[in-house]
Image (tube, rainbow, N blue to C red):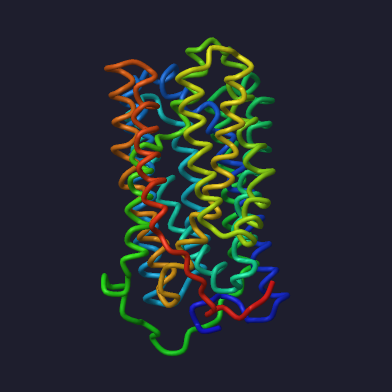
Length: 398
């Protein structure tokens, strides 16, 4: 292991690193998901924004994620440091929630949305560290564990939201949500030990010639899928308009999060056994199920199953998507490739949510789901031509 990693190559240290990151991710997602179940309702009902404005805010957030991850990934590889990006990212997320609590108009949310999503500078350096200290045999498992802890934190956060939203109200609840993110930042700052780089340790950055056609095709198909993968806010608002009471909407989000939490690690392990592409095909199939469910179903009980299918989709998609990026990218530029990949996906997310909002406003609530279904079919067809590649550069075993 070289100076790109933040830990020694001893298996015990590798385990501790993964577990520390997993706990920090749990805490941060707990804070995020105190907010997320009621975010669309806060924006549209309390701050009186329409669906196009909600789509803009959500899409803007994902675009900022993309830019922040690309920049952080690039500079992390350049200076061979990871830790500073990670703890500062959690710090940004914590402070942004205080800004949400103080906002009195939807336009006021914009700078805090930018700060919140800029906190994703943590993701590419953290994921690159995990990839570096993993092997081909357990990389999917480790990313699956991260997603399981993400979603586990989400479950706890949603339960807190359900228990306290009517007691504290939106604004005090948003302020409470800042605490876990700040704790995650402190945990990484204290527990992760980064090796001191010798000398300046600045290397050339990732160039286009370092990316082969196979990886480029994988990026393109994910960009196509991302153009139709609008945010969960549209499912939440659809459920509300379908007839679910406001108090039950966080329960639907809880159902999704529990499903994703329980299945992320099993899907990661499954990808280690049968390959990445079959699991990614399953992820696309379950998203198609979500779209068809919204379009065709007229039953409260079956709408609940749509949120279950959404949880299965996210459990299969997130760990495997990142694992395949790590394995198709040049090992020396993993953080850059992860950041660049997320940048492209995130830049697609802004028009995706904005288009979905405009389609909703102009053609009705089913239009975004028809649009997304078509793009999912195209992305799945392109995935057929991607070749999986096993990388053996990591020699650590967890």
